[in-house]
Length: 62
Image (cartoon, rainbow, N blue to C red; front, side):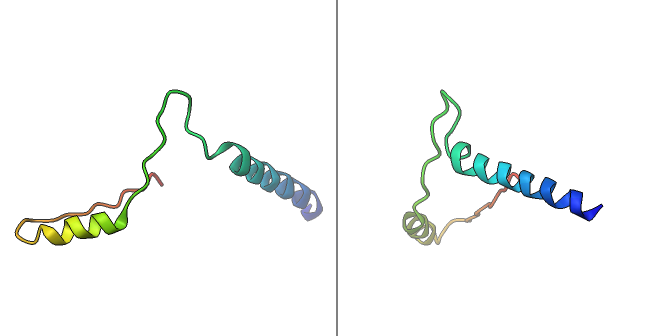
C-alpha cells in the first residue's frame, strides 16, 4: 500500500514545483503587478506620526 503512495506523492510534488517555478509569478492579464513595499519609508512615516493613532494591519489570504 505504501509503495503505491510514494510515486503519487512524488508526482504531486513535481507538479507543484513546476507550477510554482513557471506559473505562479505572473499576474493575470490586465491586472497590474503588486507594488514592492518600502519598509524604510513605512518606518519613517510611522515614526513621524507620533502625535496620532497608528495602526498596522498584517493580512494574509491563508
